[in-house]
Amino acid sequence: MAEDIQVQAKSKMEKTLEALSAELETLKAGRANPHMLDKITADYYGTQTPINQMASIAAPEPRVLTITPWDQGVLKAIDKAIQASDLGLNPSNDGKMLRLVIPQLTEERRKELVKRVSKLGEESKVALRNIRRSVMEDLKKMEKAKEITEDDVKDGEKEVQKTLDDFIKKTDEIIKAKEKEIMTV
Image (cartoon, rainbow, N blue to C red; front, side, top):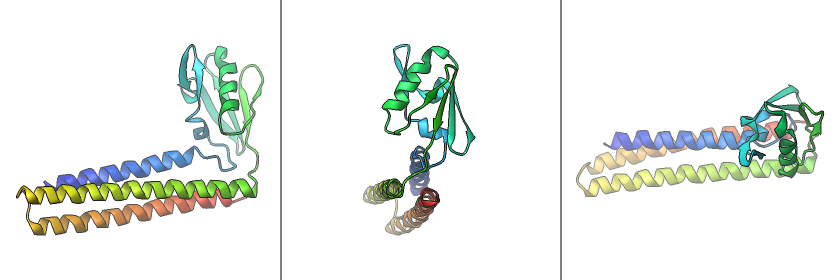
């Protein structure tokens, strides 16, 4: 039974890291990345729809994204949505597709992004620690209900702490890699 809790905790921790990685993908680091547009939605016949669900997005060059809608009628809506977003980009529209040129990041903007990355990393670490705390509480409840012994609780706590340490180390590696990517000119 304690093993089930450990497996669930590990699964939740893996999902936390996946969420962090997905969030970091949306940050623009001076390179064109189709995931930058993941959170942007445009009006698609009265429904707010993610751009990646109504157009193909490609990065033909390191600092250029092309957006080709499957339905040409939504080209203007996509254009407006990108301009209204917090990306600070102005797409050029040739009537069939949009081109987004990603400008070089200024030193100031790089530092802001590094701070944001660090903040996201800390939020992930807090989420990981909350998972550990939840497991510890579950183990104590099981001990009170006489489902497991005190030794099982101690072993479980050691195991979840070891798992947490591993995931915090992985989080630090992900953050360092993203910070290096951002600071590379």
